[in-house]
Length: 305
Image 1: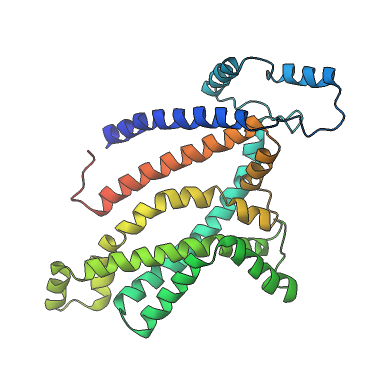
Image 2: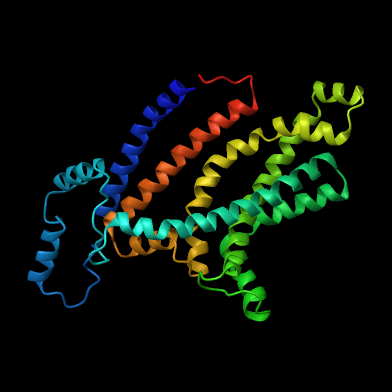
């Protein structure tokens, strides 16, 4: 297993390197710059700012300088937040996004797995249609529609929740449900499909013939194999959930890393954009690796090869 993990980590180095290189040059080729939005900056001050941040250097030299600092764990200074580094901003904003993601993941699993199992066990019944309908709504209604609907109905009209900010525990409910409901829908459909495939296999019929109870068949024999598609989906899904949603954090004015990434893109804050993309890329790599390990654990036929 250790060899498998090391080999997978080595394979991800070119991927991370490509992400860093592509993002670095893409943000630099975007029209405008970090200081072009400022008004009435005298040319000499603008020149000094560019010299301070190394923007007056050739692009290839800026790239090599950035790689050198990155190898030391330094993501560089922010171009928009004076006297703040990207490391400090990520350390400040990431916990908020992680907490939002944890709530959304809890909602997605709590809602998606039971609905998927019920839909599979009660196939072609009213419960199946009801669970599948809920899943279809979650897939078809995007978060930028569901979020405002929940904010208007439960926040503004009924006054049950705040529609913006990140203060008390109740402020986690609306954004958590908005973000988690979409993933719950996919988990429900994948669980249903995986369970249906397993429930028609010979070893399930054998278990029924031996008189095993339906609950034992589902939870001991079928659920482990039926969750394999869900496990494959959870890798990139968890990475996306835990890093927060750009849309959700913008709608509910949550001070997380997702909203910071959007602002940094508008502000041409090159280093903050790069730092956020590197973090997301690293999370995707780690989560996919954990998914591969979990798949082998769930399916002994697979090996660490």
